[in-house]
Length: 366
Ligand code: ATP
Image (cartoon, rainbow, N blue to C red; front, top):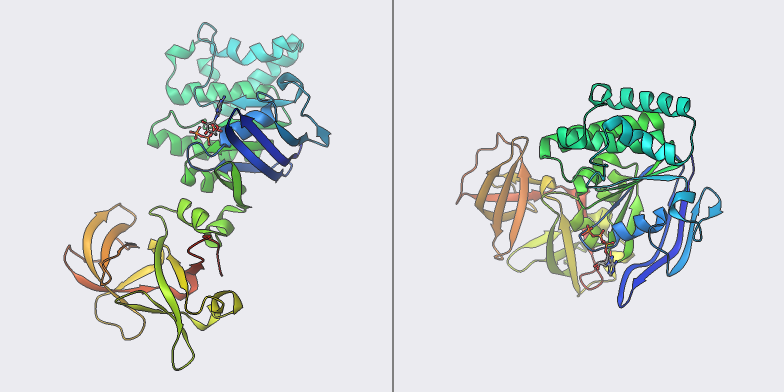
């Protein structure tokens, strides 16, 4: 087992800076997920840790050892790829044995480890099949098995579930969770899928444009995004953003003038960070699940809106609404809510779940 540390890591490809000064501590036994949109540098970061790319600058430590100059096979890591990368002409068993045989591990030990991994992944009865005779999910299990038998200090996984259908992905996600509980091997996992990241990670690193935007425990990052990028990236449907001018009323309360509508800022958010923006524009962030519908006009601090789209999604119904200002906003409500297109409703924002941001920099003010 080992912890992994990245310090000011940079990777340049000609004129593209794929990784732009990343520092990240990946604790021993953690399941750390690098998540972000396509092209943000996740795969390149993983390939740098693996030794498949050479860093342009910065340091990579596995355990306490600087590994920048170590080749991939000297790094005590095992990688699992999106496309499984199984040898098509070898059987499941041969695929799992191959890496260990290359490393000159004793036959008896190999058999023992392959048996253990096959039991763990429930692929014992597939041993004699070739990859083409397996389903996608079974192939991915074999690919995991091949990594497990190596008993490495660190697993590196690059979108390993992305070729599976939706149902199988959910199932394999649960299996990966269980596997990590059982083996506790330090894992660095790359995905662009924020749901996958939230469910698998004990530490999440949200990346954008070659940089880490925020690191932390998934629910903490979800509830306390440091900027509009992180706030908007995590969550589906994503956080609503409304811009307005910050004012102080005659009675001394902060409010945002949203155009045709005003939003009263609860007292607990009234501190120096926000009050500094008096007279200036501020972005209000509110997640769809933190918006409630009050059809029978409730007095204070509600936002009139008209229902435009009703999208039942099973466990919730997503509504697209138009505010009086003409802006569009999404709310996720209980599926039993009786609402139809064209209804005029009042929206109430949960006062404990409000976020305020600087519209220019996107930085959180709360
Ligand atoms: P995706 O989710 O689409 O795989 P990613 O977040 O993993 O994206 P990377 O594959 O790390 O992103 O790529 C980051 C940037 O570096 C992109 O702009 C990409 O085009 C560029 N890049 C990656 N590999 C190379 C390469 N070998 N040569 C030149 N540019 C590269």
